Image (cartoon, rainbow, N blue to C red):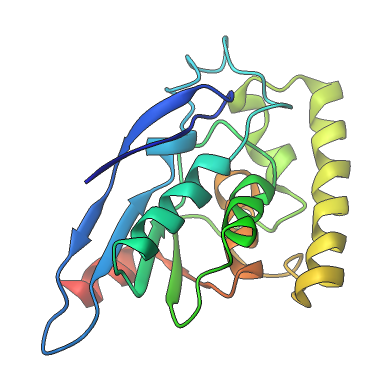
Length: 189
C-alpha cells in the first residue's frame, strides 16, 4: 500500500507499507518502516537534514492509515529516521485521530539505546552539532515527562526506547512492546 503522509521536514511524501491478510480469522497485520515516512534519506541525508525540526508525524499517520484499513496488529520498524523528536510527532498524529483501540503495537528495534541517550548516540549522524545534541537531549527529557504525565508510561529506562531518535519510546507510550527486529522476523517466518 501507499499513503501520502507528512515527511521528516514537513513536506508530503508517499510512503509504502504492507498489509498482510489475517490468518485463521485473525485481523490483518500492517508492517510499517519508519524510514518510509521519517527517513534521513527523505530529508536529503545528514547534510540537508534539520535535526531539530525533523518529525515522526508521518509515522503516526501511517499507523492511522493501517488501522483504518483494518489492521489490528501494527509492526513498526524503527530505524533510519531523520528525527530525534522522541516519537512525539507520531504520538500526536495517533492521538489526534482518536487512537488505535484494540490493536497490538510492536516497535521493532535493532538497538538497546535508552530514550534520553538517543540524541547523543544518533544525533550527529542525523546532522546535529554539539549544541543541537544538547537541545535535543533536553527535549527528549521533556517528552519523557510528558509521556509519564499524559500516558502514564515511563519510557526513560526501556531498552530500545531510543531507537529512531526516541520513536521506540513514543510507540511504547502508545502501548507498544519494544522487541528485537530479529526476534520479530524469526517468529513471523
